[in-house]
Amino acid sequence: MIKGEQRQAIEDLVYRSCLALDARDYKTFLSLCDAEFRYTVTTHSPEIRRDMVWLDHDRKGMETLFANLPKHNSDHSPITRHATVYTVDAAGDAAEVVSAIQVFRTQLDGGATELFAVGRLHDTVKLADGAARLARRIVRLETRQLGYGYHVPF
Amino acid sequence: MSKNAAQWSAPPKFPASHYVDSRIYTDQQIFDEEKEKLFRPAWIIACHESELQAPYDYRLFTHPAGVPLIIVRGDDRKVRAFYNICPHRGNTILYDPAGNAKRMTCIFHQWAFDTRGSCVEITRGEQGYQDRFCKEDASMREVRCEVAFGGFVWVNVTDDAPALREFIGGAMDILEPYMEQPMEVFHFHKALVRTNFKLWHDTNSEFYHDFLHYFNRITGMMQPGYYERRYTPFANGHASVGSMQIQYDKYDGSKERAVGWPGMARGGWYMVDLFPGMTYNLRTSVMRIDTSVPISPNEVLIEFRGLGLKADSAEERAQRVFDHNMIWGPFGRNLHEDLLGVTGQGRALRQGTDSRYLLHGREENNTIHDEVGMRHYYAEWSRRMGRAAYDPYREGKAEPVRAAA
Image (cartoon, rainbow over all chains, first blue to last red; front, top):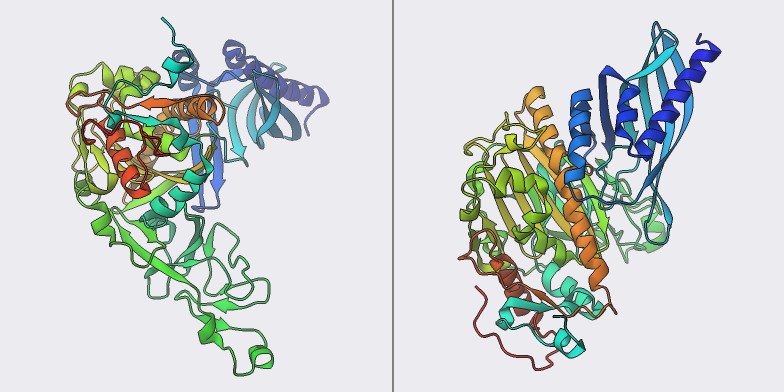
């Protein structure tokens, strides 16, 4: 059974990770991640009846991705991640965390906001010395139509 | 010095084959004609055979002309295509985008059909129709269907259109040597984009916009051989693009592609643009296929597929998926940039913006920044539409100084 303060630390970690990515504050996001961190976006295609991987990087790959993005032409519309932690299951010095996530995109011109994507975050969180670190994040998207797409991971 | 209204509206100082009137991207009547004159008689890629591996596997596809289709592998393993419209009361027969159906049964009144298009069940048929109408009268509408050019399933909803091989001509010659091994789809997504379908095909038909892509500038444009890549136009509006050796390791986070493609030189990259809106794109380790389904003058639904080899090991497939996603996935560097680019065109060209002409005037001996690919496309567009792309309303603009290349 997970302790109340551990659950609080885990929820705090999930929400801070969203805030950091919303702000495109990649340094802070990576500071929340373990050295062995891995990030993956997956989804299932009912059309080809296959699970698909849409993005997959280890920590070094994420660092490189974040360093490369300013060199590219990207949509500058901000996105806002709304997460709700559903379940936290402890397993030794780690916890498996499932959260719902909705991603909204707000147009720069006029500020209209649209729902961009929905899915789940499946996080593995390492717990040590009262601190929580993201060891693994799998974003399982329900939404598969993303229009012209986006460069920043959800 | 800027332009006033008259100068802005004046035709460009190019041969008329080297520009188009921007109203061809916005006019509803032209759009409706395009669906009938360009898409309805054309052979269109509906899916890939790997999406229909077992008998009775089916796949739905909305044809760009508007017809909803079922593609199904029969008990005899032959792939056929039918209207997804019940001949009884016009209902949709199959709803899920893919599945396995020994009988295709309309949920409305439970009329059922086999995978050869025969009606096998009319519920309470004799009671209602007596001897006036029977199962033989209730067959599905079959459309022409062929599996070809890398295992893709091609459909044609016009019974008397020329054969697929005649439609394609020599356009696929450059790719056919690389499609001898069976392929398999590992990626599929759709993107609804606010732009005209031709603008997406234009983007696939010119490489001058490599300036948009940091990845392509670093790995291609700045490398030897880039400016020697050549376009080759073919009959019916198709065109191919020759290869070079892409230097993938020049992009931070990328590396020379560890998994290649049978028979292809290291770092190779071939493209074939097929009229009126499909593209084969074989980039060293991954085949990408784009199929455009026009929705409205300023909306196109693009189906994107990524393919590897059916014989891939798990490690090989994972590498191909990684290579695909780096530039071509929904979060990939290049696809987002390309789709942003055409969305910007859609925004600037929509009705009322006073956009007048798009230039296709670059001539570089049919090499990579030559705009011959678009000129060739619009020459065919003009022929099939019975309208000149530079003067779609026959307002008397100058005749082309010379025919499009």
